[in-house]
Length: 117
Image (tube, rainbow, N blue to C red; front, side):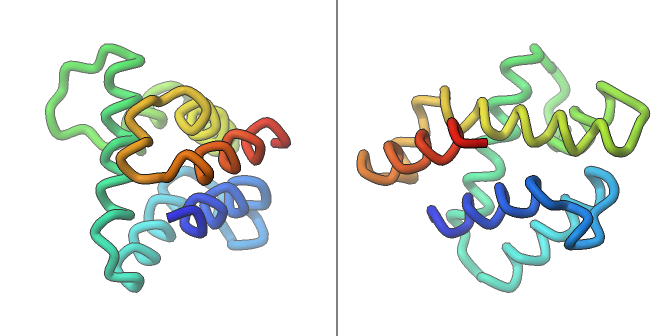
């Protein structure tokens, strides 16, 4: 799971290297990665991120994706990626429910990784 998070942070750090111009490109890339990896925990992790965002922004809509939520915050494509990066790092730094996915050692590593970004 740590490798998946590192992959996401790497993409968000250099999106143009992966031809990612907007949040929708990121969404398709990550969903393709999840499908290829065949790891249901990756999908559950992304769902947890969506729940975190919905709670933070008090979104009442049931079936909204993190992509739509962030897209609603700005109309500029590059801003969506920056907002996503900031929100993802904040999620990794603050969400206590991540203990379901990571060991305490991994959580410490992720916290250090987030602070360096």
